Length: 366
Image (cartoon, rainbow, N blue to C red; front, side, top):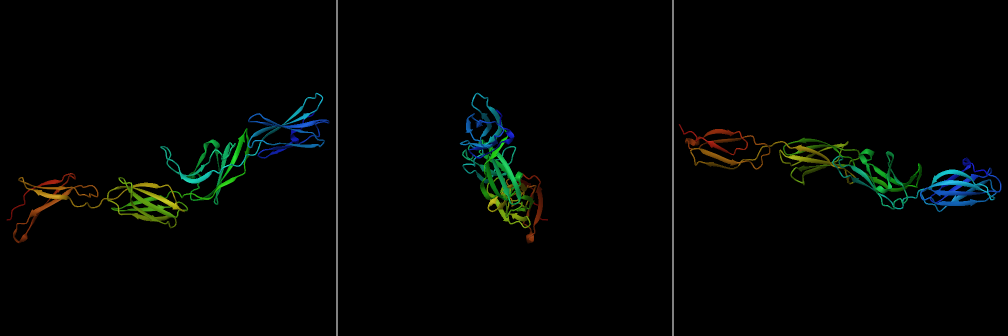
């Protein structure tokens, strides 16, 4: 008996069947042929017998599992104790079924860690029924201005985080599609594609910030990433969770400037700037700034103590120092002079934490 020439064999597969066609002209007379489809996962065999005078034969193994690997063999058989002639045709995967449930796609923010700050991501989630029997899920992400970007995820992971900064997809409207993939023994079969999101708006990138502090205000210059419609800056004091001042502007040629006021002098503020696009906000861009010093308020509770041989001027520090108190100046004099004349003598306390000063009695009138 002569075996089938493997080069004369052609085959194709769909989700549940494999069809094989071969040339039987050189296998001899009085024979019949047998197609065997051997499963690589569980060893089961589907057998199809073919008896035909035709020179070109065909057979189909059906009721197969999708996305599975099969080895194809064709036997030439003849009654009368002849040894079968075997031709190992090749290996093939049945087509992968489309995902049975639709994964979801959404813009999100990754959780920060000690080594990785938070970033904007495209979050793709799915359930176990999304691609039953698949080895991988392949996601295609595209926009009008960006070529197709493919990412694959092992089916057991159930989620895929796609960094928007890395993929340069910030501010774009995305189309996201998914394909179930069978990938076994170097063979690959993909299902038809399912679009899971169309015109999905991604958030804009963070704006860049330049700060110019004043005594009771901070001027914030904002430079937007592409596509940003509105820029907002807010100043938070170190000791407070609520914004002390907030202001917004619409970028002209990508830039605009806002003033954050009123703020406290000589105070540390954290300035957070965000960009907005179609109601989606970017991650905040944070900067630190300190406002400048301003004139302090007046000293409190000023009084004179004359219980000793010297006068003692006592006071409390200003309620609003508005900076670092470096010294206090004290002036005094006498009003018991003819025609209301007055003598004033000045003195200075150079220590900022001193709140009293011994005073010599004023000189007597001449």
